[in-house]
Length: 395
Image 1: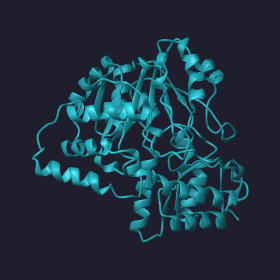
Image 2: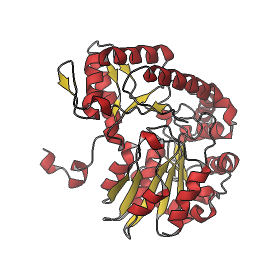
Image 3: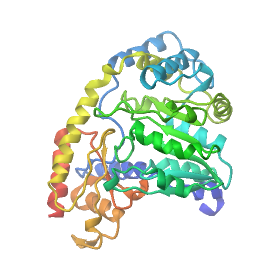
């Protein structure tokens, strides 16, 4: 019955990460021992001090519609967080709280892009960027990178793809799926290009900023010439293990924030009131409160990189942040394993699921067609077992 659906929904792709998660659940329900390295969420529980704040909010009867753009107390906490962690100066009217950072991104896209506008996607990129931009009628232009450049683009590449139709560029640092982090020097070099093109806006997705392994995370909005053109997106899902609480937020020029509040008022209105109150407590806490999670992710990163490096013909970089690794598996393209010919990364990912019972995500979904994404947000024993299965299969 797809012919009865709108063209809009028919051209919208299914999220490959969510599709693999659904496939994993289906196979587990059949009794198979599937190790899931496809999921993009921490395996920790939400810290107790945040849960206690939520319980207090329930007992204090926070159960009415909240303001569309978020409680004033939460927006003030976000202002202070931006100043403390990023040295960014925002006013409360420049902050919009949404139902997850994905909605913050969608709001931005919907209020800025017109049909035919061009959006620049430094690859690899998170899967929903291109889907949401396409939904808005924009044309997506990928800027490729490789493992040899640590999955980062150059100013020369950026300059080469800009046209009069270019309206928006996405930056995601630390990056999902590569774990790479752009340095201040690298961002300033890219900003020099953008300064010559004043009609281009920047969406800076910084949702993984707290999950970094000693490398300084820099916000591009800190560059004076970029501040009035940048929408800084963040949230509590990854850093505080609050994926299901669905709270994201933006800091943006006030006119963009007002537009995002307007569109959110028609789509969802304000985000969950209890989750908002708990988020105030989360953001007021010092980053040291969640350092134990970051330390554990670093231990897992070192483990999975070591194990992957022992597999011949897989190429990996060392991620500076997030909880993902993006190995290049192109050596296996054209080869046959267990009767299956591997033509691309999707075939390779499906082979691992079928023959090794390990769920990953194809890099094709992220604009990295030679790679697959593995998440190490699982226990170390699961990492060891999963990579052992992969090594035995490829051997």
